[in-house]
Image (cartoon, rainbow, N blue to C red; front, side):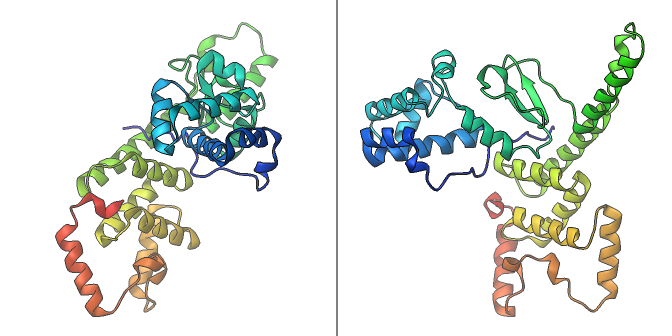
Length: 308
């Protein structure tokens, strides 16, 4: 089971003087605060999806219901947003997609630390995305690049060396051996997800994405180890508890499972309580409160809602 690739953002930059932008002011002048609110809601939706939002009949109807705005009013507001340049007119008329150069610049700036970012060429309005590890999706269905950062560096070195050699070098030499580690990482992540579903319950897309981010920040083995400890502890919030463990290990310069074992042995022989491992909201309470909570946890541990 491959680790899901996150597309959207959890939050996005919003200028404090956005209401002073001429484009925004025009929409607000025509539609009042409803127009302004719809613009912000659309930006939220776009960044949640990535850097564009498909705007067809179904999305139109659903968005109208979500923001509680009459569909005719919503249509007028969106049309004015396109008319005055908040969203790119050519892209919308060709593909029925809401996006802009500014939206794309902010999105790619926010995702530049990600290992892979999927790009749909037809929707692109900016060219400076070379600094980002990009998966180019030319036809939405094919032409997907799956190179890791390491393999991209190796490929560039190979190309430089081949320029110094003859032009008749066989194409088979372009194979990138770094693809094997990628498979191993995906298998490890799949085992992590399987462990979660066996011990906690069916995993949601949100929780799966959160584990994907943790694997990006640490590594699969370390996250797997932290998850096992979290399941044993039976916390109220499994993800946050796991994050707390990983942050504590990072503070102790723990980078491998062997380092974890050494830290555990040190804790066993030390009289110092292992408080840093436990997040603030999970620290011990008075005996009476703790025992009641443990009874509740024991009776409802199988409920997936425990680990939202």
